[in-house]
Image (cartoon, rainbow, N blue to C red):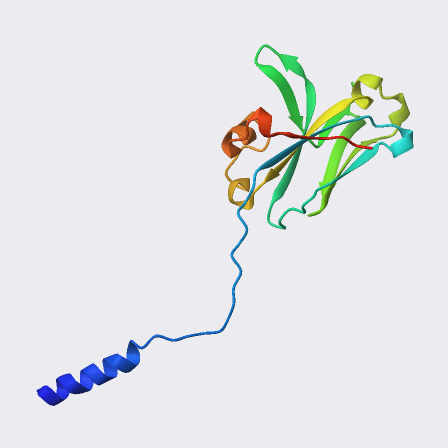
Length: 166
């Protein structure tokens, strides 16, 4: 019986012996919630679009959302998510706003057949909010509501970074 216990003890020493490795690893950066505000005009000089550079670049797993200030009501500002389209009475596309992004920039632009004819109300001094959403939140929040997104990310108005475009 003593020999069996001794054998099991020796086998246990080999099995439970710790290993060492020289492999290195990186700690994943902490996700950050960022909201940027830009005011721009869309015209023929900028080809009805604006490129906003993100510095530092965002993670490839992050999601970018863009909202346009459409007005205000008794509850506060009204933010419409992009893409946003406006149609003629017959349902045909008149004009709209779209965006695309990479990990280093966001391209916001107008679409339509005759953008010169769009009134200044929709082309000049447009206030846009760019929201960087960490991947961990991207599937769980209502992205169509600026208020829901900002609340879920716990972003305060004082944390919104204003970017002056050249």
